[in-house]
Length: 160
Image (tube, rainbow, N blue to C red; front, side, top):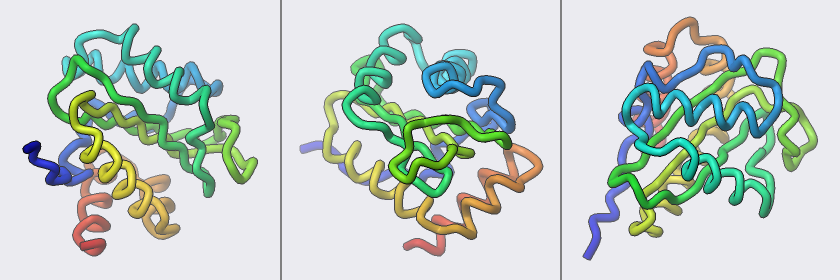
């Protein structure tokens, strides 16, 4: 039986996988920019297939969940642990969000192919965290990657 214990979100984030200001303004390019961060951090072995998986998932229905947040995600068979990247956009991205608003925070999640229960629980945990306007505002205003990680750590501690 698989260990479906959900990792802490703040532990999945690394300073190297957080873009304080996404350079891209188009949804697909912003997703690619975040995947590039995972590759550059040597966490992701294959950019092409990971990107294809996320974009294929995005075609089904937009992961722009509203309130300025997007949570693109996909399962990926070349990893053994979930990977998370975060990008901020002051200007905002057109992301075909459910509420029609621009997205300012993009949390990209890749999860191992063989643990669908953990994948679903992790998505739910991230969505619950991001339901907090206070957290969204704090992440948008943070001045460094480390400040973002600490902000999420504190919010996650309170969520328990």
